[in-house]
Image (cartoon, rainbow, N blue to C red; front, top):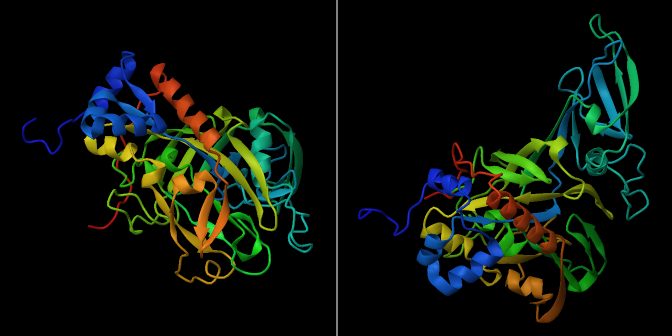
Length: 393
């Protein structure tokens, strides 16, 4: 179209028609980096219909809404435990929310420091999707319609009338590279950090990461269909701590932690391969979640975004021994994901070994699985009802 902003323009309907016909060209984000580098964004947009992304990393703000079914006699549960991990019962008689970061009730926590945090809500969710039996215990105060004051039973995921993975904050769009500049070892949600800046931990799949492939949220929003935990899920809105106004590079990518997603999907369609309970020494429990989001290449702008490489994406080096915990806005350098994934960066003039909390290997697998689903015609691209709130003009 002569008056168009872009040289290439496609619609969701056109892309889905190509998927149904088995004609869509689908590539992973890693493959798209090469295509854009060799052909430029306009030609890449002509060639490619969908780019698949992936990430697999600890995501604390995750959990499941579960209906465990009425007992006989019935109970209005006020407190509930699954394998001795407490779930929130203030929803309804037998509706509960189990958080991934809730620890088993008798855990000594950090009384013997650093605590091991061997089992928690993320492990319960993994056990459920693995088909294992879980012990449910509930107590209530008794009413005329719900007379029971206690109940106990063994459950499996198949037994549950309803189980929905509901994650309030996943897929952080970029995150800090954490170091420890104090003279003692510290234990954080970014892992164990050795003293005097002797190691640095980061948590992003870089060029494979979903929101780094759509940095200004042009195609991701309410209703976007995604790969979640090995099954199909949806973006249900921005996640908690969504911060689209973080400083950005000229290519649109954020230099600091920025956007987040709220996600949900049927737990019964998920896999323990992509939902893993994790114990973080000295910090607590969490769950590693596998997420993959398809990016429709509507125009050359989206081709350019999905063509950004690890060399084009940066984050900040932040001290977690004092600055992070005391709200000090300071960094000790800006590094690319190419440097981080190479295993070494320079901080204060010294070489520092880097380690990822996010698995690039599994992120790559997720992108490949999602690519196969689309190529097989089993997964169409859902146009969001509305995209996420973006940066202020």
